[in-house]
Image 1: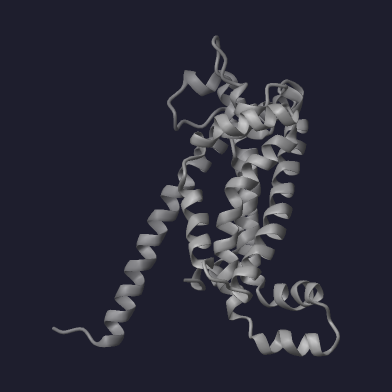
Image 2: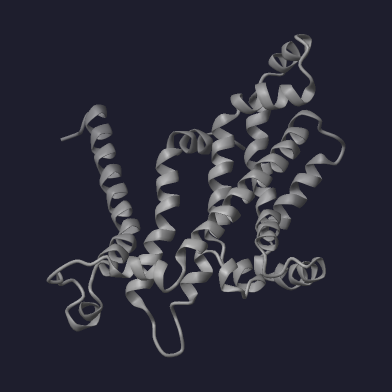
Length: 278
């Protein structure tokens, strides 16, 4: 019996939905496991079967994050790094992408290719030269050094994200705004950026993730515990004598929640951004 087109279409949609559900469950399983372990009392983490429910749930591990491991200052440092990375990357990357989109020159294609090739270089290869630069500038053990390192790696990606969105903005709209007396800077900030909002939000999201989750540069540039972001603070829970599993899982939840919530908040822009481009 041959299926009709509508039946095949419904069957394909159901199969795709089932596959995506399985993928989503696999992706969410580590986070669910972290939340489960972080709510277990210390004595139940190892003394019972892994999937057994404890007699009572506890929030002691979350309290220890702030009392014992000073997670309050780590959260502040991570927010500062992520916010600065977003601001600098989107501003400089947006201006560069607009220049590539609206004022191409001979060799601009080569320059764009160089940007993406530079981004392909593994970050570990840049640690030694960047460390030397930060040392000479006096930026070691400071948030500024981490922000510079993350932004250097993130800028090429932002340029490549935003350039196709700026190219889709009709030139006639910009010309009309200039005829109304707006300067080129005002045209960019008041006309072009709002029209390229999906790409802008996509760049904001990726820049935030780059600053929030980076471990390489904080681990390399920072040794002062008061300046460490969340990613480095999690390493402090693994000592030569003990691993604080409850606090480590609780810290993982604290580190994971903001990006997840931001992705949900910006998902409509992210989907539109992923559909647009090269």
